[in-house]
Image (cartoon, rainbow over all chains, first blue to last red; front, side, top):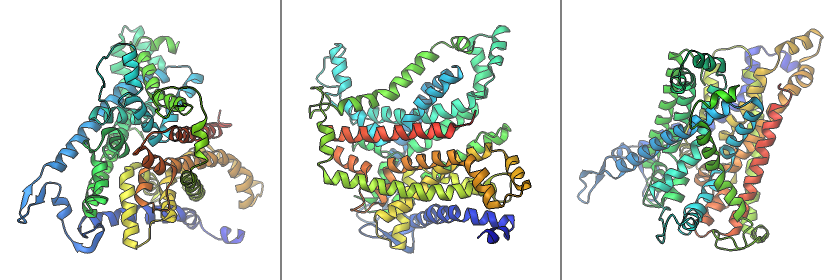
Length: 302
Length: 262
């Protein structure tokens, strides 16, 4: 064993050490994604499944058109609407997370070192704990007769029998904001952690007001983190499944739910694959945009 | 001094406090309600451990917990081993293909969960493999790799390469160099990576939901299927236990990962 290792040159040792990861990721990630892409260009079997090897662009046409009873293609805006709603909710989530997350990250970065670590663990705990469990807790808060409603009634802020918060876009939006807030705070903090507070002091001494310091010193330094946070929130929010499913109800689908429907009720696997392929494209686009930015600014933000 | 300056940004502290309240209210409410006597979860009717007792009387739930443990342990072992070897291969100077391989390792983090789920389903459908606990384990191994890799890589990047050179100069063979010099430096990263891979696998819902067969229900799937029907102290109790395990693991990963770093 020892001799075998000693007789290998460096590139071969590397290849040997890398082989499990390469095998797993090429076979378990890249290959499945290639197969998914092929499936999106294949015909659909009647009761789910894919007609492999039968080329068809029907799945992509289905984004915009549907066949009516006389086999004509007519324009159908249903899927466009779901995409539009997902974009809208994801954008709102990104903005909301930024508005909440940037001050939070700044607050953490401005604490003394020993408190920073505690606050950071506090932000990461929700990030690592089961999303399903946390979203489930929101049901107890939001539902009719739930805790928020009881509290507001107790404080005599509302009198109406129920708020009707659950199963609305608002509930989905609260859930999305909640789930993705740590994804915004952590990268912005990572950028701000390197902030030299003497610059802030100097700016103050030279007569800059709080807003000027924020805009001229802190924001530019936090920008890589803000961009990273925005892509980390926007793209996964787009494909989110459980939040719209549990809090939004069946009326308010997002792209993730649409994908799942294609594999269950609709039995249209190629269409499900096509939507997923488009989502993957968006995710890669997001990462490329971040790369381009970091090259432009000469920073290695990743 | 820093704390003084931050006060010059009005609203920062208030927003941060709001953000922390926002993050923790549901978690606290959930834990609180798991000790509720009432079946109507939103109304407090006195302290009770009934929810926790009921867990042990539900064979379907215990089976799901067992599956979750099997999947998460297998995924943790294989992904941590593969990630450790990869981190060792990728340390040090750049070589051709290094950035491609690091991008590849990051791929499971980049792709939305539902995309990984669909790709895995397509793969198993194409190859004709029946959905089972095995297909779940294979998929989990793959998406856990970056979570195991990142803490190990971070640890290695801070290790002192001169120590290895010194050991070699003192005629240690490669085997000894690894176990006496590299491994002790690497170990906290490997432990942290393994813990994170474990909870990542335990927490996954969407990917398991797509690739699991009828006999491969995991805890998150059990919870999802049950809350579709009703809410009960039992589900609150299970959720609280999962939450507790996650928090314990994160704290462990964090403190082990930080060891001797200062």
